Every structure is written in C-alpha cells, then in structure tokens.
Image (tube, rainbow, N blue to C red; front, side, top):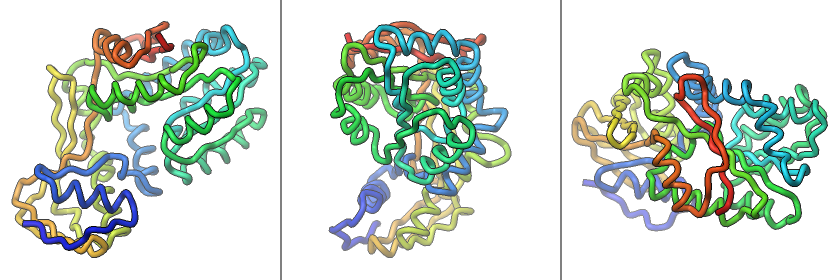
Length: 323
C-alpha cells in the first residue's frame, strides 16, 4: 500500500519519482542517476575494462578521424558540430583536435542537461584545445536543438555518441530519431553510435562489474531521492540486478528490495511499501543489428549514408541524413 496526499509537484524529478514508485511494477528513469556524484560514477564506468563501449567507439574515432572529418565538411565546409549529451568529451576531443589542427571551419556546441558536466568540458577544452570555438548549451536535447536551429543558415552535424539511443525502447527510439530528423535540413548529418549484438556474457559483464561501480551508479537515484526529496532509502537493502535477452537485444537493470520495507519521502508526503524481492526497473540498454538500425532510420524519415565499425564489429557509428 502506498500512502500519499501529494498532488502538486514543484519539479519534474518529484513528479516522475512519485509516478514511478506508486506504479506497478515500480520504475525510475536512468536520467536521474546523474548529479555530481553520478557524473563521476559514470566516468568511472567508462574506464572499466568490462565496459567495452567507450573503448570501441574511441577506436572508431581514432582510426577513421580524417575520413569522418572530411565527411562532416563535404558539401558545405562550414558547420556546427552539435553534441547531444556531451559528457566529458573524451572521444569527441579526437575529432575536435583533428578539425582544429587541419583548419576546418566549425563551431562546437555541446548540449547536456548537467551544467556541472558542461562547465568541466568547457574548462578542459580551453586548456587542451584553445583554438576550438565552444558554445555550450544547457538543457534537454530538443530545447537546445530548437534554439540552435533557429539561428539558420549553417550546416549542422549532430553527434549522439555512447549508444545513448540504447536507453530507449524501439518505439521511443523512433520518436527520438524523428524529432531530430524534423530539426535537420537536407545537408545536415546525424552521427550516432549503436552498440551491436554480441556474446551475451560480454554484455552482462559490461553492466554488472564485480567492483560494484555500476551498482553504485544505479543506486545513486535512491541517494538523490534521499538528498533532494527527503527520502530514507537504505541503499544496502537494495540489490542491483542485470538481465539480458539475446533475442530482443534488451539489457535491463533493476534495483531489488532484499526485504519487506517501507520508505518515506518527505517532500512527496508518501510512504512506499516494498515486498521482499520487489523490483524497481531503472534502465534499459538496447543492442542492435544492421537490420534493426536500418528499420529505425527508415521509420524516422532518415537514411543511412555510411557506417564505421571497430575491428570486432562490437560497435558501429552510423551517419544518417534526411530521406
């Protein structure tokens, strides 16, 4: 039984936490893993040996830098390089360095919901690549893209790295791709990473490391509820659990209650009951094959221009245009 008298929410975080924890089955959005601590944990995940995604995409950008850069400048050589969910920019800096050193006419516009992340990225770029013009945009992808789009006239090259598309179910992914497509002009390019299907054990290991970093990252959503909404979650009473279905290509993350317990969240004026082994679904990480990527693009009004892959074909970056 959930007891709540809360009807008015002051933030989207409050509203979504209330909706997710009073639903059945319970769920919380992975976008709320991220705050200063969550940002740091995700950087740690990207450096784990099991988390192959970062290294594979890094290898693609390193091995195809010139080819990718020339593609970005084809047609109209002046462009805005817009990155959705920029993070620390480690991989993007490979391209930025090449573009800067080889006289390409571009502007870098990183978009992120976290101002903390953007501040860190801008600071590091000023130090490492002072010749790159950086115009950070804080906000959701589409708010920032619409604002950039209203400037008109310059070709856009939109980056969406890290297989972040994998956090969306296929229908949501089509909606997302369609929303990007609608903000693209004919000459614009969309450079997007997809994690491909592979040995299921390799995928499970990437999201369930033995050191517990991924578990801490998932549990950070509970820590944020405690810190920001006056919750009293005991994080040790929840187990992080990962499953992967090789048929659908869907990896799912859960937090599982180890015992019967009741959690209060003061700012929501709510009591949340958990049965032993009850779950909170926190994240999906979708894996793809070529056929599914082509289908998603077509459904969204996009077409595949070309693709780049690592040597093991674990991961691919596809270049999409409007159809």
